[in-house]
Length: 76
Image 1 (tube, rainbow, N blue to C red):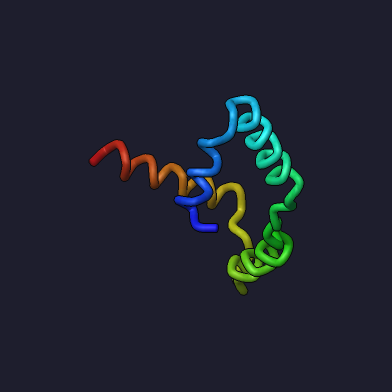
Image 2: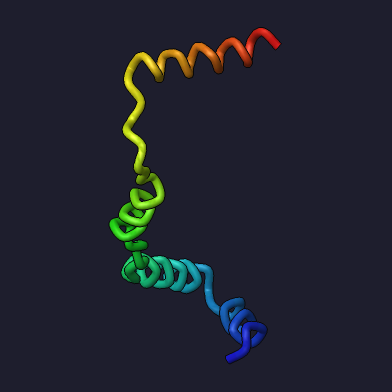
């Protein structure tokens, strides 16, 4: 049935029947399972992107980097 034909049939229904149809459609949509993306695979790939051979910076190095960034940001 084409969408125009379907619309014509719907408008022939009484208001209560149209509301019942809406309820049935909403229920049918709620019952369908929405496929959840495989997040664990994406997380593993992202972790692989973050891997490096260099050691993590120390707290002092991080503090120095932040201070340098603040100086660049606010003094220019």
